[in-house]
Image (cartoon, rainbow, N blue to C red):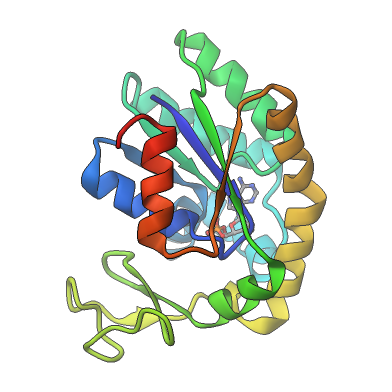
Length: 214
Ligand code: AMP
Protein backbone atom coordinates (compact mmCIF):
# COMPACT_ATOMS: atom_id res chain seq x y z
CA UNK A 1 0.00 0.00 0.00
CA UNK A 2 1.33 3.45 -0.95
CA UNK A 3 0.17 6.43 1.06
CA UNK A 4 0.79 10.15 0.64
CA UNK A 5 0.76 12.40 3.71
CA UNK A 6 0.11 15.91 2.48
CA UNK A 7 -0.15 19.05 4.60
CA UNK A 8 1.54 22.26 5.63
CA UNK A 9 4.94 22.29 7.32
CA UNK A 10 4.35 21.61 11.01
CA UNK A 11 1.08 19.74 10.51
CA UNK A 12 2.62 16.55 11.93
CA UNK A 13 3.40 14.47 8.83
CA UNK A 14 6.82 13.48 10.14
CA UNK A 15 5.50 12.46 13.56
CA UNK A 16 2.72 10.34 12.05
CA UNK A 17 5.16 8.76 9.58
CA UNK A 18 7.33 7.65 12.49
CA UNK A 19 4.33 6.16 14.30
CA UNK A 20 3.26 4.29 11.17
CA UNK A 21 6.76 2.89 10.59
CA UNK A 22 7.05 1.75 14.20
CA UNK A 23 3.63 0.07 14.28
CA UNK A 24 3.14 -1.11 10.69
CA UNK A 25 5.47 -2.26 7.94
CA UNK A 26 5.92 0.97 6.05
CA UNK A 27 8.98 2.57 4.55
CA UNK A 28 9.09 6.35 4.83
CA UNK A 29 10.17 8.55 1.99
CA UNK A 30 10.73 11.98 3.50
CA UNK A 31 12.12 14.16 0.74
CA UNK A 32 13.06 16.80 3.34
CA UNK A 33 15.14 14.20 5.25
CA UNK A 34 16.73 13.00 2.00
CA UNK A 35 17.73 16.55 1.12
CA UNK A 36 19.07 17.28 4.62
CA UNK A 37 21.13 14.07 4.35
CA UNK A 38 22.47 15.23 0.98
CA UNK A 39 23.41 18.62 2.49
CA UNK A 40 25.23 16.93 5.40
CA UNK A 41 27.16 14.78 2.92
CA UNK A 42 27.82 17.81 0.70
CA UNK A 43 26.67 15.97 -2.43
CA UNK A 44 25.98 17.87 -5.64
CA UNK A 45 22.23 17.73 -5.01
CA UNK A 46 22.74 18.83 -1.40
CA UNK A 47 24.82 21.84 -2.39
CA UNK A 48 22.26 22.86 -4.99
CA UNK A 49 19.23 22.31 -2.69
CA UNK A 50 20.60 24.17 0.32
CA UNK A 51 20.01 27.66 -1.08
CA UNK A 52 16.36 26.89 -1.79
CA UNK A 53 15.80 25.24 1.59
CA UNK A 54 17.48 28.04 3.56
CA UNK A 55 15.06 30.49 1.97
CA UNK A 56 12.01 28.26 2.49
CA UNK A 57 11.58 27.81 -1.27
CA UNK A 58 10.85 24.55 -3.07
CA UNK A 59 13.69 22.65 -4.71
CA UNK A 60 13.03 22.40 -8.49
CA UNK A 61 10.70 19.61 -9.62
CA UNK A 62 13.29 17.91 -11.91
CA UNK A 63 15.66 17.40 -8.97
CA UNK A 64 12.93 16.09 -6.69
CA UNK A 65 11.54 13.72 -9.31
CA UNK A 66 15.02 12.22 -9.90
CA UNK A 67 15.52 11.69 -6.16
CA UNK A 68 12.15 10.00 -5.77
CA UNK A 69 12.58 7.90 -8.90
CA UNK A 70 15.78 6.38 -7.57
CA UNK A 71 14.11 5.67 -4.20
CA UNK A 72 11.18 3.95 -5.92
CA UNK A 73 13.53 1.86 -8.11
CA UNK A 74 15.40 0.66 -5.04
CA UNK A 75 12.26 -0.16 -3.05
CA UNK A 76 9.94 -1.88 -5.49
CA UNK A 77 7.15 -3.90 -3.89
CA UNK A 78 7.39 -2.19 -0.49
CA UNK A 79 4.66 -0.14 1.19
CA UNK A 80 5.77 3.47 1.15
CA UNK A 81 4.67 6.56 3.05
CA UNK A 82 5.38 9.63 0.97
CA UNK A 83 6.06 12.43 3.45
CA UNK A 84 6.61 15.82 1.83
CA UNK A 85 6.29 14.58 -1.75
CA UNK A 86 4.52 15.48 -3.98
CA UNK A 87 4.33 19.19 -3.23
CA UNK A 88 3.43 20.40 -6.73
CA UNK A 89 0.98 19.17 -9.36
CA UNK A 90 3.93 18.40 -11.67
CA UNK A 91 5.43 16.16 -8.96
CA UNK A 92 2.08 14.44 -8.43
CA UNK A 93 1.77 13.69 -12.14
CA UNK A 94 5.36 12.39 -12.29
CA UNK A 95 4.77 10.16 -9.27
CA UNK A 96 1.76 8.62 -10.99
CA UNK A 97 3.90 7.83 -14.05
CA UNK A 98 6.81 6.46 -11.99
CA UNK A 99 4.55 4.06 -10.08
CA UNK A 100 2.70 3.01 -13.23
CA UNK A 101 5.97 1.66 -14.66
CA UNK A 102 5.96 -1.06 -12.03
CA UNK A 103 2.17 -1.54 -12.16
CA UNK A 104 1.91 0.30 -8.86
CA UNK A 105 -0.23 3.19 -7.62
CA UNK A 106 -1.06 5.55 -4.77
CA UNK A 107 -3.75 4.00 -2.62
CA UNK A 108 -4.60 6.83 -0.21
CA UNK A 109 -3.83 10.53 0.15
CA UNK A 110 -4.22 11.86 3.67
CA UNK A 111 -4.59 15.60 4.02
CA UNK A 112 -3.35 17.00 7.34
CA UNK A 113 -5.72 19.88 7.97
CA UNK A 114 -4.75 22.49 10.58
CA UNK A 115 -5.09 26.19 11.43
CA UNK A 116 -2.13 28.23 10.15
CA UNK A 117 -1.72 30.02 13.52
CA UNK A 118 -1.01 26.72 15.22
CA UNK A 119 1.64 25.89 12.64
CA UNK A 120 3.95 28.76 13.55
CA UNK A 121 4.20 27.78 17.23
CA UNK A 122 4.60 24.13 16.26
CA UNK A 123 7.46 24.96 13.92
CA UNK A 124 9.35 27.45 16.08
CA UNK A 125 9.20 25.07 19.07
CA UNK A 126 10.15 21.94 17.13
CA UNK A 127 13.43 20.22 17.97
CA UNK A 128 14.74 17.19 16.10
CA UNK A 129 17.29 14.60 17.19
CA UNK A 130 20.37 14.95 15.01
CA UNK A 131 21.04 11.22 15.32
CA UNK A 132 17.73 9.31 15.05
CA UNK A 133 15.33 12.00 13.82
CA UNK A 134 12.92 11.76 16.76
CA UNK A 135 10.74 14.89 16.86
CA UNK A 136 10.16 16.93 20.05
CA UNK A 137 8.56 20.26 20.93
CA UNK A 138 9.90 22.56 23.64
CA UNK A 139 6.41 23.07 25.12
CA UNK A 140 4.15 20.22 24.09
CA UNK A 141 6.63 17.34 23.90
CA UNK A 142 9.89 18.24 25.64
CA UNK A 143 12.59 15.61 26.09
CA UNK A 144 12.88 14.49 29.72
CA UNK A 145 16.65 14.75 29.15
CA UNK A 146 16.69 18.42 28.21
CA UNK A 147 18.66 19.03 25.02
CA UNK A 148 19.31 15.33 24.53
CA UNK A 149 17.12 12.70 22.81
CA UNK A 150 15.30 10.32 25.19
CA UNK A 151 15.55 7.48 22.68
CA UNK A 152 19.19 7.55 21.58
CA UNK A 153 21.04 10.27 23.48
CA UNK A 154 21.57 12.34 20.30
CA UNK A 155 21.69 16.12 20.35
CA UNK A 156 18.39 17.97 19.82
CA UNK A 157 18.58 20.72 17.24
CA UNK A 158 16.35 23.33 15.69
CA UNK A 159 16.14 23.03 11.91
CA UNK A 160 17.52 26.20 10.27
CA UNK A 161 14.30 26.56 8.27
CA UNK A 162 12.16 26.37 11.45
CA UNK A 163 13.26 29.91 12.33
CA UNK A 164 10.56 32.60 12.16
CA UNK A 165 12.19 34.41 9.22
CA UNK A 166 11.86 31.36 6.94
CA UNK A 167 8.53 29.96 8.14
CA UNK A 168 6.45 32.64 6.36
CA UNK A 169 7.93 31.70 2.98
CA UNK A 170 7.44 27.97 3.61
CA UNK A 171 3.78 28.55 4.41
CA UNK A 172 3.42 30.76 1.31
CA UNK A 173 4.95 27.99 -0.83
CA UNK A 174 2.50 25.54 0.69
CA UNK A 175 -0.48 27.75 -0.26
CA UNK A 176 0.84 28.41 -3.75
CA UNK A 177 2.04 24.95 -4.79
CA UNK A 178 0.69 22.34 -2.44
CA UNK A 179 -2.84 23.79 -2.30
CA UNK A 180 -3.35 22.94 -6.01
CA UNK A 181 -1.75 19.51 -5.40
CA UNK A 182 -4.35 18.82 -2.71
CA UNK A 183 -7.07 19.85 -5.17
CA UNK A 184 -5.51 17.53 -7.77
CA UNK A 185 -6.13 14.55 -5.46
CA UNK A 186 -9.50 15.90 -4.33
CA UNK A 187 -10.54 15.93 -8.00
CA UNK A 188 -9.57 12.26 -8.24
CA UNK A 189 -11.62 11.42 -5.14
CA UNK A 190 -8.51 10.17 -3.38
CA UNK A 191 -8.35 12.67 -0.53
CA UNK A 192 -9.02 11.76 3.09
CA UNK A 193 -8.87 14.57 5.65
CA UNK A 194 -7.65 14.36 9.25
CA UNK A 195 -7.77 17.17 11.82
CA UNK A 196 -4.19 17.58 12.98
CA UNK A 197 -4.91 19.99 15.80
CA UNK A 198 -5.93 16.89 17.75
CA UNK A 199 -3.62 14.84 19.94
CA UNK A 200 -1.08 12.93 17.80
CA UNK A 201 -2.33 9.59 19.22
CA UNK A 202 -5.89 10.42 18.14
CA UNK A 203 -4.68 11.50 14.71
CA UNK A 204 -2.85 8.17 14.41
CA UNK A 205 -6.04 6.27 15.25
CA UNK A 206 -7.92 8.19 12.56
CA UNK A 207 -5.21 7.43 10.01
CA UNK A 208 -5.18 3.75 10.95
CA UNK A 209 -8.93 3.68 10.45
CA UNK A 210 -8.64 5.30 7.01
CA UNK A 211 -5.93 2.81 6.01
CA UNK A 212 -7.85 -0.18 7.37
CA UNK A 213 -5.15 -0.87 9.95
CA UNK A 214 -7.24 -0.27 13.08
P1 AMP B 1 10.31 19.24 4.91
O1 AMP B 1 11.30 18.53 5.77
O2 AMP B 1 9.37 18.29 4.22
O3 AMP B 1 9.60 20.36 5.63
O4 AMP B 1 11.16 19.92 3.71
C1 AMP B 1 12.13 20.88 3.97
C2 AMP B 1 12.48 21.63 2.69
O5 AMP B 1 13.00 20.71 1.72
C3 AMP B 1 11.32 22.32 2.00
O6 AMP B 1 11.04 23.60 2.54
C4 AMP B 1 11.86 22.41 0.55
O7 AMP B 1 12.83 23.44 0.44
C5 AMP B 1 12.58 21.08 0.41
N1 AMP B 1 11.68 20.02 -0.10
C6 AMP B 1 11.29 18.89 0.56
N2 AMP B 1 10.46 18.15 -0.20
C7 AMP B 1 10.29 18.85 -1.35
C8 AMP B 1 9.53 18.63 -2.53
N3 AMP B 1 8.74 17.55 -2.68
N4 AMP B 1 9.62 19.56 -3.52
C9 AMP B 1 10.41 20.64 -3.41
N5 AMP B 1 11.13 20.92 -2.32
C10 AMP B 1 11.09 20.03 -1.30
